[in-house]
Image 1 (spheres, rainbow over the protein chains, first blue to last red):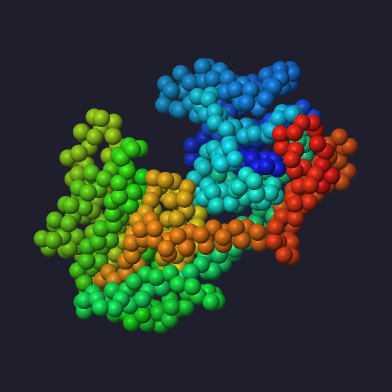
Image 2 (image 1 turned 180 degrees about the vertical axis):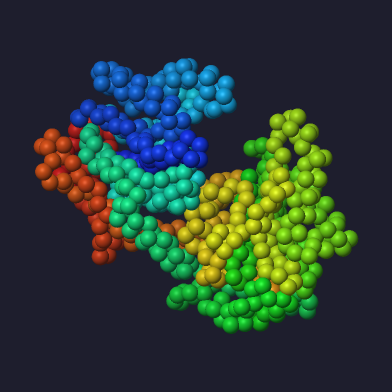
Amino acid sequence: MTYCLGIVTKSGLVMASDSRTNAGYDQVNVCRKMYTFVTPGEHVFVLLASGNLSLTQSVVTLLRRDFEAGYGIAKAPSLYDAARLVGEQVRRVDAVDRPALERDDFKFNVNILLGGQVAGQKPGLFLIYPQGNFVQATEESPYLQIGETKYGRPILDRGINFERTSLEEAAKYALLSMDSTMKSNVTVGPPIDLLVYLTDELNLTRMRRFPADDPDLAKIRVRWEQALRQAVMKLPQVRFKQKSGTAPQTTGESIELVETPSSQTSDLQSQQQPGSAGQVGGGGAATRDG
Amino acid sequence: MTYCLGIVTKSGLVMASDSRTNAGYDQVNVCRKMYTFVTPGEHVFVLLASGNLSLTQSVVTLLRRDFEAGYGIAKAPSLYDAARLVGEQVRRVDAVDRPALERDDFKFNVNILLGGQVAGQKPGLFLIYPQGNFVQATEESPYLQIGETKYGRPILDRGINFERTSLEEAAKYALLSMDSTMKSNVTVGPPIDLLVYLTDELNLTRMRRFPADDPDLAKIRVRWEQALRQAVMKLPQVRFKQKSGTAPQTTGESIELVETPSSQTSDLQSQQQPGSAGQVGGGGAATRDG
């Protein structure tokens, strides 16, 4: 599996990709999924690819061959046209490889994120589908993801804003989104490639690869876990409160959310423990005086 | 779609479910997905169901009919046996309905969470698959999910611990997991049913339904968004720092994570803005003196 994401804000672009590929469960490899095409001062294109590695590599090889010969996306008058050219190469590989794949029940699976800028135009971010068509990120939906997208989405939904999020913040959200995905799904893994592009720079100057043992990556994971737990503790506390006037048989309690001044920990629960601790697995119907 | 989760800790069980069902995109309904079977002092069974509503309702109807006649899970000597009986009913509905469904390319899709306790034994939590077999939550994996599970998983992975998490905290994590899922996927929606069961209680006394306009639900969402953004800000800041000794043409910068004392906001970015603001969409290769 794979997880790649791109974020576009007023200030520029952030793109991030993991590096884990697998063929079956027992053949797991490291492979960079970020490909860059730059002519300084003219255009910057960054591709992130997910799907069948043989297909994504073919698409990138064809794009690279054209680019280095000075045509293809090297001549694209806009990022839209570049996305169109990427889609064309996807369809070209489709025509060559799909029949053989489908004969053996493999899906034709290529998804590509294309971020970048052409001189004189705005930076942009596109998602090219296996069919070669594509969508573009907008100010209302300023990020796009491919691969294993769901684990890392809630943090982006809460935090990314086209107007207000700085590139440094966006880079941090990208790392957190990537870390959440790696934590919940082992088929997404390091090294993490992170790239930050400032609008109108028309060159790539800020890239970092975080290997598995990167101390910064470890630090942000540990600190994020601590910060999340503290954030949860600061929320209104869940309390159980005796309902008045219920029938005698049903000793009902309401579930309430109440503000607590310090909210260090759930003190009601720690009060319960002396009564109920050690009873896990014990018999009988314990009553509860909460 | 559906999202249901169960959490088992040393202190008891927390179970939560959404209420949105849909047949196609334009027929969206509200339906409770939490079903309870209780004989006070003897046993408590809570079922959460996802999948094809016609199938889950059939399974629950068959279980209910037996239960009310005093057999089926009403006679189950353990939670394991109850899970086995639920699986049997799934297979019974499978035998009746699967051929007609598959003829029209519908999948036989039923997933059930079964949480509860039988007197004299530990509480437990099972996930029954469409094939009728099942897995059990363990101390290492103390929660189980069905339906749209991925968005709400990272927060559980960070926060839930069988030994240390109190029931109040677990209830809060369940609400946050549910809220993250609702935020990122419109096919999961309120009302939210939340149930908290204390070990050895052998009755259900703490249940709450949060409708869409519930003020507590709204409060926890708003407060959680604020808390998350603050947590992100307190993390080490991402900074771009001029690399020394690079070739003159490539003005490279490293991406670093640095501690900042106040971390109110990303001040490097705000320093950049006077130079680059308003250039979005402007032409030419802007240089950057960060």
